[in-house]
Image (cartoon, rainbow, N blue to C red):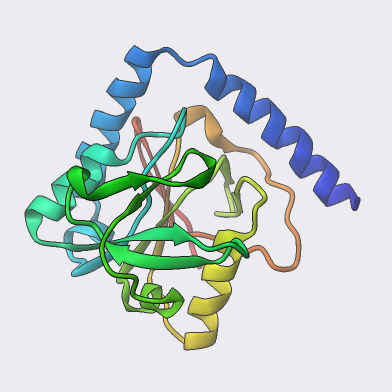
Length: 197
């Protein structure tokens, strides 16, 4: 284990413990606030296609934002976890068209569009545990979104990369590895922070 991986493991543990202490009331308030702030975000306001995800557990809630984007007529793509941890994609057709999947995830039930479908997104909402002042994102460590970011780079596309977090998850520094990629913005219930490229 490299020192960066050890640092990441410790930081992930600390952040997940803080999330575990959140109350159901604060989770609901956060989701509503993130939906409001998200819908005001220029990167989402002008997007025809948004690649997003369905929050689970104690993640900052995305469902209200997904519904608001869908109601606005935005094409929302949601991930479908493949056996090798890569992501396929399918269109969001509303909460009734989500099904339980492995690892506690909810996935769209519609036709699979292929892993390359994410390359059509104007904005990609990335799950994360933290972002630092440089825009470096700390994920959960599964590597699924590292593959997505690599796929976008190979395709030569540059969608806006946005992370939804709790305010205390914007940290001083996230340990980084060579494959890590900075994001363009982070949205918390308190506001939006943008990062220079």
